[in-house]
Length: 232
Ligand code: CTP
Ligand code: CA
Image 1 (tube, rainbow, N blue to C red):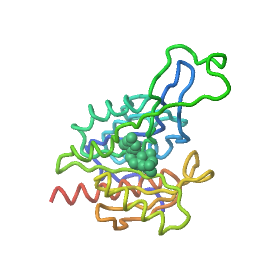
Image 2 (image 1 turned 180 degrees about the vertical axis):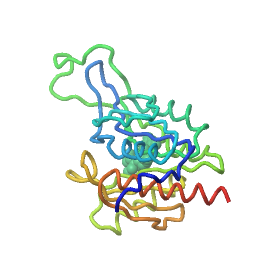
Image 3 (image 1 turned 90 degrees about the horizontal axis):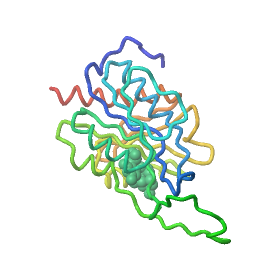
Image 4 (image 1 turned 60 degrees about the vertical axis):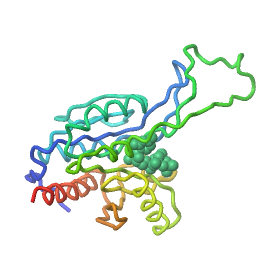
């Protein structure tokens, strides 16, 4: 579908978007990261700004140029992302958690470079679970705030993918969940995307596929519709 450039249905809406992959340092030169490119989050920010939203983009590691006209907050670790979200969430009408957040971080960070000579032939890392930022934001959200999560899943069938998505939105307590299939060649670091958006009840709101920008526009239309409904 063509992109109606004149659409201003998010005029004045304050939108907080997270994008990219968090990185957890092991020592001054190494980290644990993930394959997120930040493309879908950056596309959401760009599309939202062009529809009139005031966008704050909390960017973890991204491999794309970030759009003009949005306020960017750069972070590296999950703890930094959590702090930035906590700071900006209260002044947002909607929060979209598109970032790929590291589930675990090293239990200890070494201030000196880890040396093979000291470690030996095998290295075992102890990791501890990070707090769930999305679940926290959803639990603290005001009645008129909309919280959107993303779910990256590897699933064999569409039905299995939906089941994982339904279980996840129930766990997270957010308003919408954008479910996308990831794999060695799907989802991450690609130009295109195919997503299913679920609501709290686990029902399919929309299915969208195409460029990450067109998918962003379709996700934002779900948001715009809900914001409009809440106003009446
Ligand atoms: N998320 C988060 N904080 C975390 C982990 C994930 O806020 N510590 C958010 C992501 O930004 C995304 C959503 O939760 O919006 C789902 O992320 P995902 O990795 O799919 O789900 P998890 O709950 O981490 O479950 P798992 O990775 O085990 O499937
Ligand atoms: Ca995860």
